[in-house]
Structures are given as structure tokens and as C-alpha cells.
Length: 144
Image (cartoon, rainbow, N blue to C red; front, top):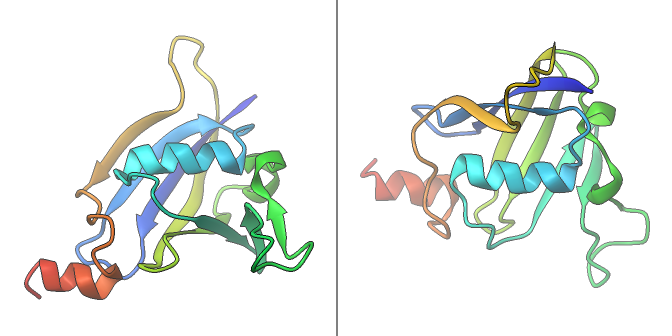
């Protein structure tokens, strides 16, 4: 098993809100969503999806999505969508506020058996509050 070091940052926010995370390359996108929720400080109230090379991954919504339009995230491992350092995926959380997270694979490393993964190595700034109105609402909250 390889260890992935990923950098996650929110789009359209200045100064940047970001995290550096280490986790298994065998982590599924579904598992990664939960890790991302914890790392960023979200409360997992809303729907989400990933976009990789124009393809959507998530939990298909039968009332909105055509069959095959959304690939089930539970069976997709990070190693299949982040294949080499520099690879990127987009994670969208909360289709109303539309928080866009750029996820970039920074390094593939050997696991250290003495360390418990996943782990957050570092980051900057707290995430915006849930349901604040996206980047515009967040800017208003901050007085900009």
C-alpha cells in the first residue's frame, strides 16, 4: 500500500483555506469524503460529488441523475483517480453554496508502520460556516 500526500484547497477564497493530508492510496472516494469533512471542518450536512476528467463520482440521485451519469464513489479508490504526483480532482460540497475543493496529489510515499493514517499534516484557516451562502456570502460575513 502506498501513502498519498494530498493538498486540498478551497477555490475562490483569499487568503487561502487549505489542508495537507496523508492517507492510503486505497482510500475510496466515499471514505475520502468523510476524511475531507473532518479535515476541513464541515459538518457533512450536504450532498457532494467529485469531478475527474469531466466524469462525475458520488452517490447517484435517481430523481436527478440518468443511469450511468454518476459513478458510485464507494468502489473507486484514490489510486485510480490520482495516479501520479500533480494529478488533480475536484470535490464539490453543498450544491447550494457550491464549495469547490481542489485536491492535488503532491507525493506518493511508503507508509510508516509507526504512524496512524489518515492524518492532517498542516493547514491554514478555518473553513467557512455551513450554509453561509458560498464564497459571496462568506465574503459578506468577513466584511468584504
